[in-house]
Length: 212
Image 1 (cartoon, rainbow, N blue to C red):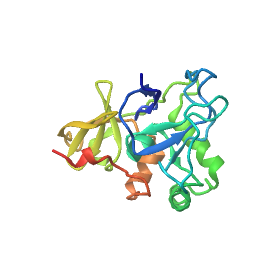
Image 2 (tube, rainbow, N blue to C red):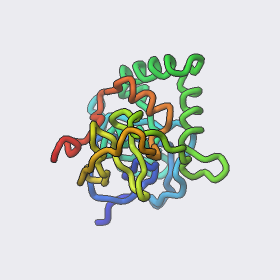
Image 3 (cartoon, rainbow, N blue to C red):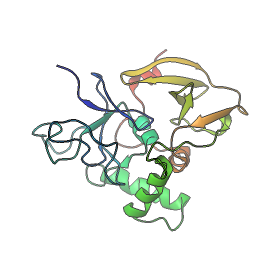
């Protein structure tokens, strides 16, 4: 049986891959009655959840009229795509996230305002495609940020860049010198959040990030 197209990438794309992720997420109902994806998102509320919560069981994936279940390798991947913690299954994370976001952006209070800002940072209003961001100095990027190189996403971790795949980080190379310009994939507001030392209830990094 072919894998469902419900795996999220750092670039915000949704692909089909048999690998399993550590973060469950949604952006509304993206599929039709046959389970085929028809849109990349449906609304501004892009959330990241726990894989398990209170023993709840899903009757099935991609059910007609229900939100599309998405899965990300880890939270760094979900953050790069522009997702934020769920207010239900990750209540404490949500409160911590909104508190930190408010400190970074005074006046931006409440989920609707935060979601609106994140949506502006992740989607190009003219095309609906992923928004690109200006290159920044490699030395300014915190761990957990994703950057783009030759069209592929790489994770910033210490003095290394780790190459992302749906199943894990498969190779690494030295981070460029501090002044070298890198194009960030992670939305600017979420780069700032990572800079504060963000770590929630779901794994920020997949175990493969610590290997090698």
